[in-house]
Length: 429
Ligand SMILES: Cc1cc2nc3c(=O)[nH]c(=O)nc-3n(C[C@H](O)[C@H](O)[C@H](O)COP(=O)(O)OP(=O)(O)OC[C@H]3O[C@@H](n4cnc5c(N)ncnc54)[C@H](O)[C@@H]3O)c2cc1C
Image 1 (cartoon, rainbow, N blue to C red):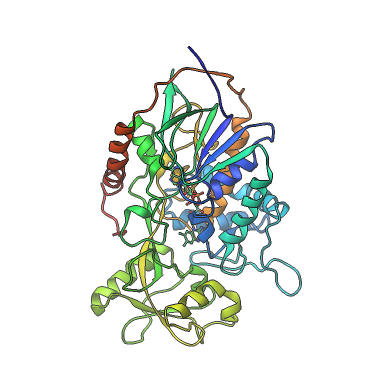
Image 2 (cartoon, rainbow, N blue to C red):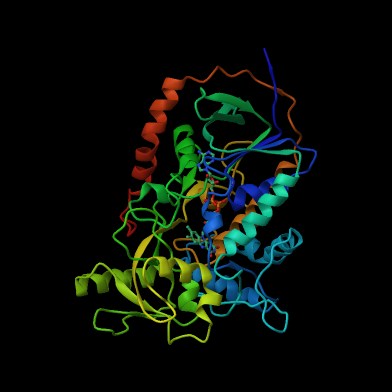
């Protein structure tokens, strides 16, 4: 017996990678985006600093070298090449979708610089770049009658038969798990910050697609490559760590020890600044170091960093006048489901994009503001690759999913992914 298919493509996740994949599929395709919380609750919306772009032909070598150097030369060079060469095209796509980046008084884009970049090549919308990009893309998605967004629901498994993927198992609130069939699946479930006590990520990002991959023997890669961001606002309150973007150091902020002395070059790659901060905290026997922007920048702080300024005010600090305590926090996952340059996983008709995938762009350590760009370039590539093959009309039959089984594996997933990530020591705890 055969089932009729329900969708052409099902996408797990409504972050930048999921949204952009959906928008790059034809309007004749029936698309479902399943997302664990509300559509806007993704790390993509939180992005502050900006998005890299190759500014001109001359910038290629230096962009390549900055990315490779930050990644300890463990990056996949072909993937970095693709990301850089396609960067201008995807930025143009964003502009066409209505995204607005900051401009200087002469009307040109106001490029900024972040740590480990040898020149300014980062487009930004004040310090709320992710919100600007994702809110516009979400609007475009909602305008498309062929795309359905299912909020508050999670993909808990994929359906496999005859060596290929045929759909997903979804859990909607208060309902038993159900099979949803399609021709192609795109996993875009983001990072793993929810597995850490101190992270800049949303807590519901728990590497769910990684758990699915591990259970089905789908190839994963670089699972111990976890990035710790050097500067999150220190607080004793529980909850998501608030990021103080690298762009703050890019605009001049310095780091000070408890005696008020500088102890590191603030513009080194993230992992090196993090190491230096941990060492200084140990030496000073302090749970934080200080970050000082006031007096070290020409920028009008409340205008250039409105999000950070306001949040720090709520916590009792005026960054336009005083230093703030900062501490490293888990931030980004460079490893993930192993994919090729078209975001194809080791299972036919299963794609992975964004932070949940590993195409090798970032190597051992991601260069600041490369992640939004990488998500755009490789989710578009997945969408274009999907259009190269035909859509299935008839699917094999799959048994009705068993609630008790999924209760059990969902409980075990955190441990499964955590163990894999923590096989080698890193600084993310
Ligand atoms: C505070 C912060 C600031 C950042 N600043 C920058 C920056 O300036 N520049 C830059 O390049 N990068 C930045 N990053 C990194 C960047 O935002 C992310 O790496 C990138 O946006 C990841 O996009 P994504 O679509 O892969 O994942 P996300 O945007 O995290 O989206 C994941 C989606 O998957 C959904 N999901 C999870 N599990 C399931 C499931 N089981 N079923 C269905 N849906 C599921 C989630 O609800 C969410 O919608 C920042 C990250 C943070 C946390």
